[in-house]
Image (cartoon, rainbow, N blue to C red; front, side, top):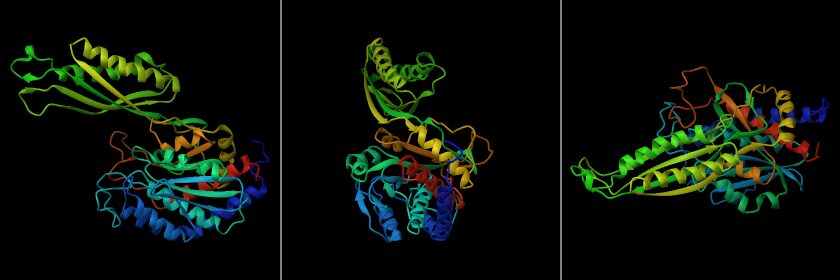
Length: 400
């Protein structure tokens, strides 16, 4: 990006957005509290969507069941911004007087994202936009089947002539006050697997007449953790995590079967293919060597979330112009986000908005924690970052 960017016109527009966002901020903060106090898990977000649609006070269109979108600005090409609608099945322990009491919680900051997109859209109503702005409120980011593929299957990006999609996510592993963009992969592909070992159960006193699936499954579980270190280039980020093991019903019965569930996370498609094949091979052969059978199911999840090069190059100077310092070292993680599916169709940029402080990293309060609660000032930061992304997209589309 040359020194001519951002142009005076772009700089003036970002200031207009900031002014409009600041004017909308008190209402956005109240909206965030209302959303936070009554969260809805994936697939059941209709009350949250209804609250947002009423607060917007403008025409909206349903999409992907409980989601919706709205459009502002001129006809023709547009830039989309996306927010998630869903909460997590976590019992909140923040102690604020607007905490959730229904057993669900916005422990991933989606309430902040929703309020920020609302503030951005309200600010955009007061601005002569250079290109269309499409606000997408997407359901089911936290569960499978996730909502982004459903949005895409409606043809929304084609129907609205979307040239790129912008996202922002609060992130406690980025220092507070910094924005991380980063070119290329910033989140991993995440694929679930189930392994069931079938043996032959019996009395715990007579293991010699059984085929005990428990030690077989234990050997598989232990070996899975070794696969990444011996199969994947050590300069490539990848991991296998096991989240569940289950076997038997009581002390003295050897069960017929045992099962585990886990996740494969990779940043390179080649590594993804290798680990899919090797998890299956290792489990099947380990079980067969001991007279049992292993059944392996693999479910492909979200692809790698890869930020577009040109979009990030246009974005970073706008963030600086908006008074949002950009992290020198981009944040990248093996977390996953279904925002990545949009990148299979158009350029995308996901920004991470820092909320982190120095802490004991083994006991920190991070995403998906029952006490994670970004400050209300974060709504403004996310909204201004999204405005910067919108203008970067407008620039790439030739509208500025």
